[in-house]
Image 1 (spheres, rainbow, N blue to C red):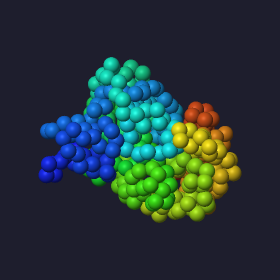
Image 2: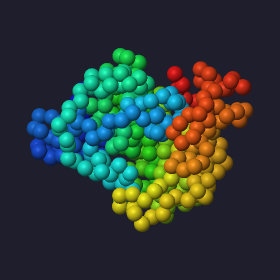
Image 3: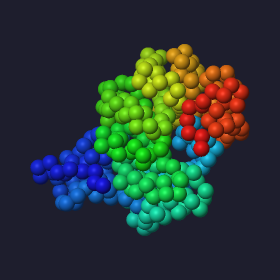
Length: 328
């Protein structure tokens, strides 16, 4: 399947919502998809910058195959330019190391050998290497291995539609609720990200959302309220929301780490609006999953480790209420 189309003398890339119109020899905003005359070639196809085995909780996904491991991979390149990026060494880098090629089959074989229940496309923005991720995901399904996207949510409408039945779970960064900030400082478009979140949920893909709370940038009570209201009104109260603490990195070395009081404020706002599953990451806060009906502790965690999982076939053992998520 191709993710580009002809438009006069240019090829239009259909991977993300920039829809870059590329002349021969031109590369898109991401730096890794190039018009080579007859097609747009994904230059990082098969060439990884990182390959690790991570707990699925590190994505973060707390309601998707808890306590399992995920073979996690990324390339170089990104279609956003976040000044606080914590993986900027690879995301803001277009130098492709071609010394070691990984076929889709090789990736799946590694996941099988290491007994990983999923493969995660992460570290940099996976939308820009969706042709590679797609081939891996389809091959992985032959062996019952699921696929996970950790993304900024700026996929094209075409990719979102194609993901149905291919990608099993996504964690999307909802980085802000300020249209100007998205456009001028991050890249992308807030409306596109919001529309994509709605369509991902409609497609039946397991969805969790992360917001990195950056001091002086998106940490106001008003903005956090707006994020929570959007989640509640458009996605529902059962979508897990991960509130993540910022630490100084990349171009934001002068900002302080997110204070615990701010994280607690975001948590309290979410709970006051009825969100059932709210978690605080990059901190010492407890992140247990609680039954939304009876309040029973279902999954007890310490950082990325599951200490106890009492969910049985997706059901609370005490009151028999269904726990939202994928548990097998």
